[in-house]
Length: 313
Ligand SMILES: O=C(O)CCC(=O)C(=O)O
Ligand SMILES: [Fe+2]
Image 1 (cartoon, rainbow, N blue to C red):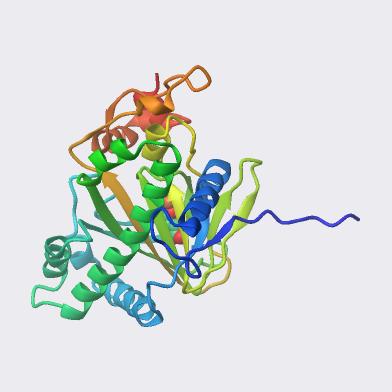
Image 2 (spheres, rainbow, N blue to C red; image 1 turned 135 degrees about the vertical axis):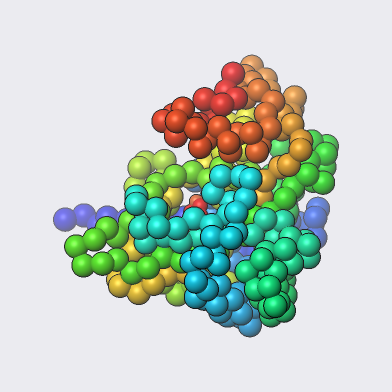
């Protein structure tokens, strides 16, 4: 039998490099980033700015959060579907998630912390804010690399003030005997971009364009950067989001984090620079949050490519 090579995601190391915009290593990393996003819609980044203390602290914070009684956790509601508390869903019974809106601002994190711990939880508040700010920095580096590579710096700049970040802390129970081992159904993210981080227990799987599932191993300094649906529209289809899912293999519970960027109160539009004979305009201007609401309608859930159904030309 011939040897079968397992597909793997590109791994891009941000730790050994000077991340000064315009430097040689910046330009060379930018090429790797854009190529990976065009080929896979995502990549693994090795990133050391989340210290191992912070890595430990944020997952301890997640455990503390999920240990709260359900009647407290459900207090975390949101005007945006799936941005608050999600749990006990029949199709994904192992899944429980809590979203923290505006997670890179002290007000956002304060609001969430006060809601769940009315007498305060300073350690939780500080840990979440520190983690979100550092990982949002990574998100902004990647976004800038893409914008510069495509020559759409102006459009990128105009959008910068409208980014808001959602930090979602997620817990998956271990599967029951004879129960499902599906943690989360295959999907693409509704975000602009997402940065996922796993803790100890693997489970995240990402689909290649050849329809093969790749399992992603967890490491403290490894993060998955993914394009969301809105990013596909913004890049006029050059970068497509990857399908991913979570499969629970053993019986251990699993914790993970997702930092998602969304564009608020701003009409996202394809830059003129990205439209030519070879790349006709594929998306009309749209509002990101209205798109999320559309996705959760019957029509949105039914469509094969909801972003095209919503604002495709
Ligand atoms: O738990 C994970 O690793 C993935 C979570 C995810 O895909 C999501 O929240 O959109
Ligand atoms: Fe996802």
